[in-house]
Amino acid sequence: MRELNKTELLNIDGGNNWLTTAFFTAVTKSIESLLELGRSLGTAIRSAITGNVCPV
Image (cartoon, rainbow, N blue to C red; front, top):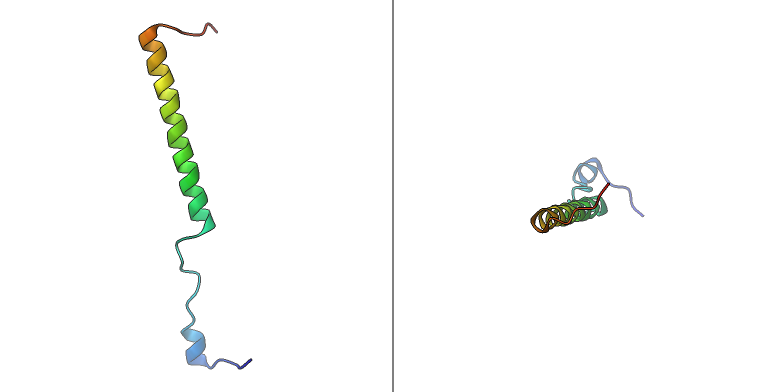
């Protein structure tokens, strides 16, 4: 293994890949949250239209 000179060391580029696991996790959680919000909203609309409400 050879040592890099100062110019080669300054030209090293790493870690700027935006496609990471954290990115995929954030996108997945966002999609899941939107789907759950849609389900809740749909259920609320359906129960309001039909008049079927669970007594609490």
